[in-house]
Length: 320
Ligand SMILES: Cc1cc2nc3c(=O)[nH]c(=O)nc-3n(C[C@H](O)[C@H](O)[C@H](O)COP(=O)(O)OP(=O)(O)OC[C@H]3O[C@@H](n4cnc5c(N)ncnc54)[C@H](O)[C@@H]3O)c2cc1C
Image (cartoon, rainbow, N blue to C red; front, side):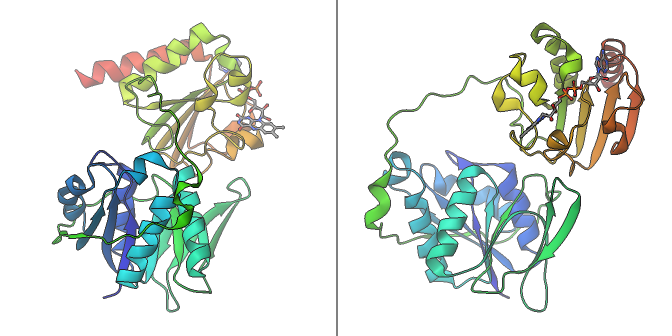
């Protein structure tokens, strides 16, 4: 069976969920071979094996911590040369997409970014993308070289499928370009304890209807009951009620959770562009004519200051 290279996103050996989704999708088109780089790479092996990696290629060097992107492209290219895979899958983060694009250019391959599904095809893997603010679904395949495909978080339900996960050291010779961009400082982001917005299974968002930074505590309380990330519309972000890093939409982050709850958000096209592929969409809005209701699975016409706290209390009560 053809091998499929998976670029592993991990933090000091803790594998992040989007990589496990890649392993699940990769098994549809071949045997997953994972490439884990940097500090703690070897510690990823048990998890990767549990989710289907037949092989785990590891490499650590100070370059991964000192320079942006290029060392990882060099390593992925080395893995590509060692394995001759049927496809290369990379998580669709900003970094992942840059790595994938550079790799595709180097190996003369076509690239598909932000795929939301993947299936085997007669002439190679076929990727599904959601385009034009999610108003169209397209299917495409790479027509040149080894397909390099980036996959959006939450595109697949993670399934365990234990495999050998044989660990092998990857031999990497860094190119001259490695030192091009040096990391000069690092400031850890203050943790909210909530999941990362783009990876969260549930996102609870607030818009202009939340009517003030102090009222976002209502949105956060619901999010915390659900173990969700908090999102915001641009209107809420622009007036400084919530950080820009939490903006969902065309000029914010693109999310695709299992459940998206929009509170006091009208549903402008630019907001929809960032959340329309969510599996289940719920909206709370006091205007029954709000465009958000055109795309919801469940809609509540009501004042969010009544509805959201009640929902939070109900969830709390049911968890007891
Ligand atoms: C180039 C460009 C890029 C953009 N990018 C983005 C983007 O990335 N993300 C984004 O979100 N927007 C983006 N926008 C802005 C977008 O067009 C909208 O202006 C914005 O999404 C509106 O935010 P909102 O829905 O929170 O506010 P509004 O459109 O003002 O809607 C507020 C809603 O809250 C409801 N409401 C009010 N009070 C309550 C209450 N008490 N209870 C319940 N409901 C209530 C109202 O009925 C209304 O529907 C972009 C615009 C442009 C031009």
